[in-house]
Length: 111
Length: 233
Length: 109
Image 1 (tube, rainbow over the protein chains, first blue to last red):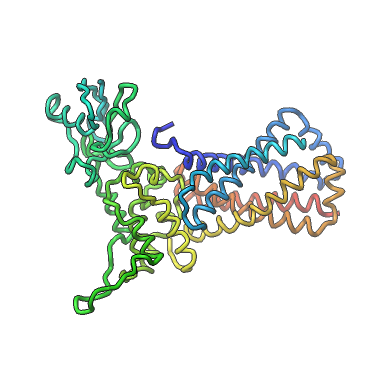
Image 2 (cartoon, each protein chain N blue to C red):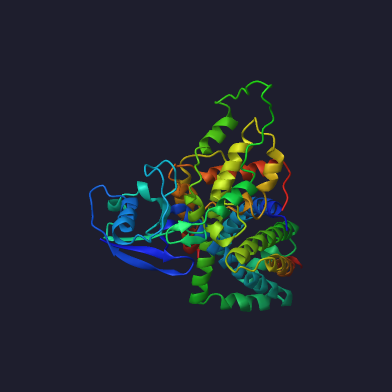
């Protein structure tokens, strides 16, 4: 990575952007799958059964982490832009990362 | 120590020089040595050489820095030093960047004070403890060196983006109660070319040699342009 | 496209989505305990106006937010210039259509 980009706020930006792209790619698939309920419960169940495969479950977990990371990063941006300026802005990036991981863990445990 | 220096303009190549190490040597010392003793055709800028003017800003091992304030010991631990002109600006020759666009954007952001009083009006009384003046003072020490501009990826990706320095200066002026162009200035700094394109990457704040925070100023502009309900493209 | 207005829309939808996401995440974790089969899901969602309303809002906010975000990426990383505006509009529209279709699918009895 370019030396000038090696600091927490930049990583926070990058994670936020990449997780955003991941979510934008995931959402249409999510909507398409749920819409199979239009054909009845059995149709939806068939698709849901497909998602129980290990690779899909792993992908699903990644999406959950991406969403948590994107939310955390977004809260960091909102804090920077709307709250009075504080010296510990860098900590926000770390907090965001921690939150995202915790959310992912909670989901993994539940599943 | 081996030193690689950019030669040429937009197209060119890095040229290697062997430069003797000295105690307390700065990168500017290195560049000066090359130009004086090894290759007089090397072009570079400097003026005060004591960290006050910002003229010697260059890219050192990938980071924009003031070369007079960068000790070789600190950046060339592995014994390799690579010096290039400031990023995000056209290259005139070798280590000299064309700063015109940087200052043009400063003007486009309305980074100039617009007076409201005449000489017969008496002095303006500005309370230095007022929150507006504190905000202005936090950003007013900028000397226009271009390091933040070179560090910013939004500048790199968005050719119209006014950049951290211009926006920081605009913020100090909208907080100046003597200034008469607040509405027009907020208009100038709004939109895709203005403060709304900042992604809070904070590379500007990270690299500013005067420890200013353009991110802080730009955040202020974002809040102010929201509240005032004005702003064009 | 007014950059300032898009920025405001992005922040406003972000604040809405922050709430929606927390509720959604908590709901899914809770629901997972009962099983995530079609019967369980539809048993909860079918006929619920509250659920329909909540997710309709979620979909619209996400479509706007995602569209604006992708517009920025299209301009900065793909260098598509003004085409980015059309791309963003298209993506937002697609997400609204697909999303509301999904909401109807799980809520309509």
